[in-house]
Amino acid sequence: MGAASGPELAEALHRLRSTLARMRAELELAQSDDQGLPVDRVLGDLGEALRLLGEVESAALAIVPVLVLEDDERLGELTARGLRRLGYEAESGAHLRALKPREVVIFDLSLCDSIDSAGLAALRAARPIVVTGATDPGSRALAEELHASDYLIKPVELEGLVAAIKRRSSS
Image (cartoon, rainbow, N blue to C red; front, side, top):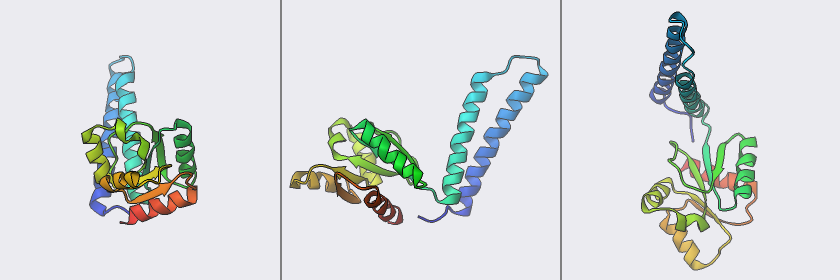
């Protein structure tokens, strides 16, 4: 995956600047009116600014966001932690959430039954990297139905996962 286009980066920077300006205005207004600090609004704006900064960094530095969806919470977090050490913006979970732009999904096939039809459609569109302990033809067919970009058999070494992420990111 290459760096973001100029207009994409410019838009992300503009949204970040707007959020920070709004936060500054809130603080200045509270200070001039001798009102208490609008903590909830400032924290909300700060959270938004940090999210936007993450988008800017991802776009400018071509950082690949990765979501590890794993039924074993500990294994999912260990995988995400290993990917973070290698420079990926990785998080883990057992439930599908709204995906970030260009996010690579590493999906444990055993979670398929817990995802509704809208989630399955989002997963198909994301072309996940499927990881599973199953090698049967039915599991491979299910991975194909999900438009999986890769099918990896557990246990998966971090190097193999990184290679699959690189293949997925470049396609």
